Length: 308
Image (cartoon, rainbow, N blue to C red; front, side, top):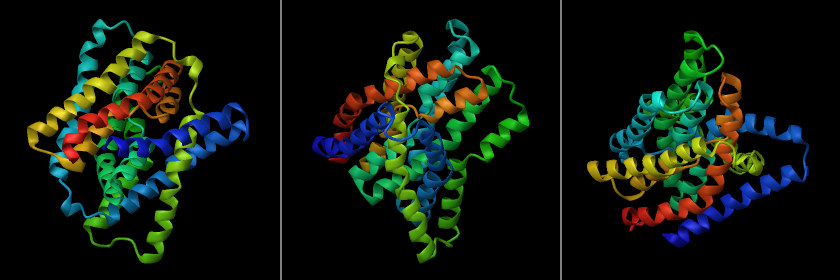
């Protein structure tokens, strides 16, 4: 399991590092990265979800067990932060960044590691995890921005940002195609699969390019709190949930993996657009991504019992 983990993380870390080097060395124009991330977010990653969910054997996956142990830690962590907000020395925008850093996760890292560890089954399990977590996390974060963000977000804008989220739409389309038996015709299936396969290498390059190593020391209390919740509380609750409901094997490993993933670089875009603390968000993303390099192999030492 440890050897598998190191092999799985090798290409991921290589792409992250390459993206960082390409950006700091200006190998490509700085204007390249924002459109590339937009392409991944709105086209390539939804295509990966559509293909993975449309072609997965959903009947053979323990979705009813995975759903509560994935959703529970996210809801409990978010509620705990909201309750504790009155005692924490954060203003509203900073609080939204702590919340995002605690519950949002990096899809590209999760999908890449699940694919490398579990093969095609890993894509299906990761797609299920995303189908459960992406809508939940986006609803919670959008509501938090509406309440605590510096920008005014109307009820209509809140609902619109949720129902038009491309990742949510990709999950809904993929599940609908699967459950209705429509599926993907051979020619279209290959087209969607090819599109989706491009999301992981390009997405990881974009994540690496977004790293701002000089920002890691900003507001260490807030960054440290988000990191403790993300790397300690969230996977700990997920592991406890798996033991409680009897979830084992690759599904359990996928649950804990996705709850332990560093926060996504898209959190910075959301913070900047909706009135969050973008500088704090950049620090959180960078520190969690760098720390995840050392942390994720340790996670799999714990997960080895589930996949033995």
